[in-house]
Image (cartoon, rainbow over all chains, first blue to last red; front, top):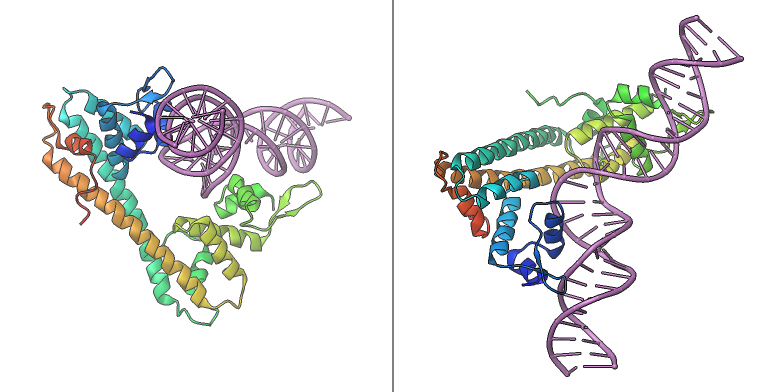
Length: 136
Length: 136
DNA sequence: ATACACCTTCCCATCATGGGAAGGTCAAGC
DNA sequence: GCTTGACCTTCCCATGATGGGAAGGTGTAT
């Protein structure tokens, strides 16, 4: 199966499949006599795995770890769980940070009359240049 | 005031100050006879404005809009409010997306015994390659 | 044979940021 | 005056994930 078909079937673009191979996330694909890459069911499986993990927000290095564990039929599930938990923690931190931003902005938006008048608490606050006040 | 002092006083690195000038976010700084950039209070104000806005997660184009409005003393506050509200909406979407990821992962982690045994629902799920099941 | 779709590699762009080289400038100390 | 060290300048390169596109080879259908 050519790279185009593998791309269509896995949801990973051909461009990205070559990229994943180049950075070592995927092992080099088999080549046919015409130098075309050749993919089988097993490769498709890995490509779908990668796509799904990317959708869940795992970074490429994390996916590398997960793939290695996935390829190793005898690995302890402990490892996988640890990686997933670390990733959940990362997601939570980022969510908290963005919520803090949004809360600060909501306060400011609430204080801004938003009409033709020029004075605007949002700009006034940005102009202060201080740290995030709603942090604590 | 040299770029280093402006950087120290605004919290924006010298590297980034030059970058913001290069992409047109800041007007070209005054130059002294030795070709050094020269900054005054007004520039410091803009730099602090930018730093604060970046911290609140505004993109560079958004900051460009906000800066333009800020420089225009007579602008209607409506504009500023609209930009801020749009940005809040963006933040909320991203937060929701990341929370969905985290929830899916939490389910999977909850189902994984996480010991020496090799079977692991997390990897099993990733291997399915389907869409996000916890979406709806 | 011709056309068209597909494949290959290689280079460039994004976005915000940082690293670093090569070279000019300035202030302090000897 | 000359050296030293801190600062400035511009320019190039790297990140990480992804896409665009060129130049050229291959495969298949008409």
